[in-house]
Image (cartoon, rainbow, N blue to C red; front, side, top):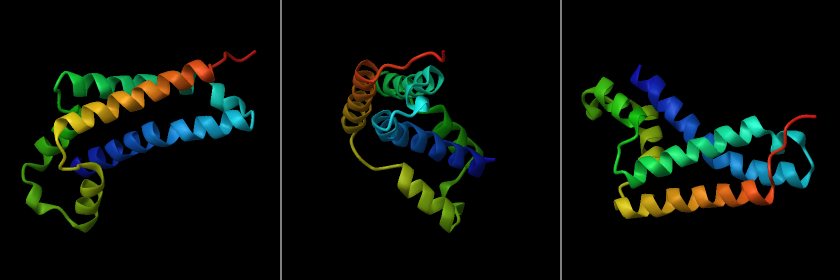
Length: 120
């Protein structure tokens, strides 16, 4: 179950990060999905939750659940260790606060510059 949560966490991060440039490219090529209010709403909500958790000093629930289920980090296999290295960086907390809030601001600016539209 801990591996499932780790993979889910990584997929969440990939969605939040990759959706933004995908929206820009999709909008440039006039793809309807790039202005989908459902996609854009989920994307904006996801990064706002991350930024809020960071500002409030909260640990991500996915991280807490994974650690709780693992009990001990030393029993990780190669893939789990590699994925964890990709996801968890040993940097000061302020770095993440600035990064998450800056990314959230970029998503909000994209929302304003390339507004989502309801289907007609």
